[in-house]
Length: 110
Length: 116
Image (cartoon, rainbow over all chains, first blue to last red; front, side, top):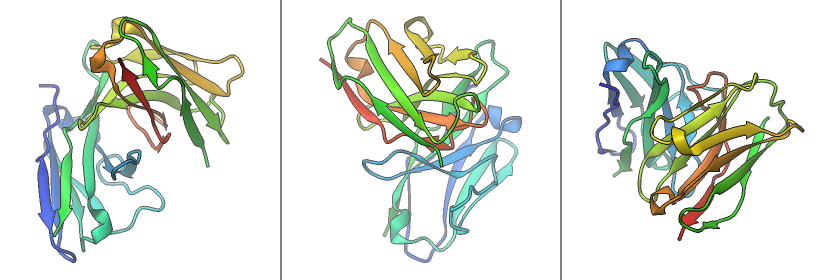
């Protein structure tokens, strides 16, 4: 099916590791992108093509892929990482190619 | 680096047409893909569509019958038209750039549009 599934919420204490999964059938053939969105701000691209970190994104953000699931890992969570995180991909094989977004995951830093 | 700025009316009447402009600075529209996305209050992100550097367009199937994205002849901005709006179209609208049509590496700050 043409959907991306994320957990609604994840929590971690400062210094711990937070993991946010993104699952969907299209991910077996399509890349995933992760965006961080803080209240009142536009989304910020933090992971590109499953595992690539754009310039300026801290090394504590990483991505990994396995089958139809891609995982965003935040190692050594900081208070400033509290935000909503969205995964995104594309259904390029559909008769109507289109972009897909996950429902978003709210990361709470305890 | 590239900067994008959305502009347009913040209030649109039901059944009328929503028109927004995205001004692109420090980048040529002749490169990249240029997209519109939106986010309804308290909800997630929704892709509206894109226009390519060569003028090709593609739209979200759920909005296709009402959407038009175009580039100005000046090549300094691109636009969104959404016809027959309802309250469900109330959202923050973003423009974005991508190296691929399914990638968004720079975003505008967003503009709130209310249908009422």
